[in-house]
Length: 166
Image (cartoon, rainbow, N blue to C red):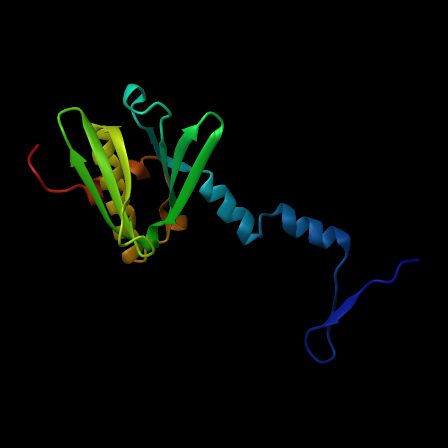
C-alpha cells in the first residue's frame, strides 16, 4: 500500500495530492509555459527576401512576443536572431522602386542595426508598421491575452502605420 504525501498549508489543515490531481491540472492548461509556447506558435506575419537577389533567402517571422530573423548562410546552415518586442528601440524601412531594407535597432545592438535587404517593397513597409504597432501596444501595457483575435495583425499594422502620402 502506497503512502500519500501530505503538505501542511495552514496549521491544522493538510492537502493530499494524488497523481491524478497533478495530471488533471496539467490537462486543464494551467501551465504558464505551455500557454506561452502556444502563443509563440501563432505567427502574425512572415516574409522572405527576394530570391534572385539573395541566393539563400532570409526570413522574418513576427509573433506576439518576438521577431525572428532567419539568415540562410548556405545549404542547410542558418543563423537565427530572436528579438523581444520590448528590446526593439527603432525600426526603419528604406524603400526603393522595387525593394526595401529593414533596419532594426535594439537595446543590445544599438551600434550596428540588424539589416535585412531585398524584401519586397510592400512587405518591408508592413514589417515596419507591424513592429511599430506591437511596440506601441507593449508601451501602453496592452495584454495580448485579452485582445487576441482574427485580424489583429491588420490592427497592429494600422497602429504602427506612418502617416505619409504614398
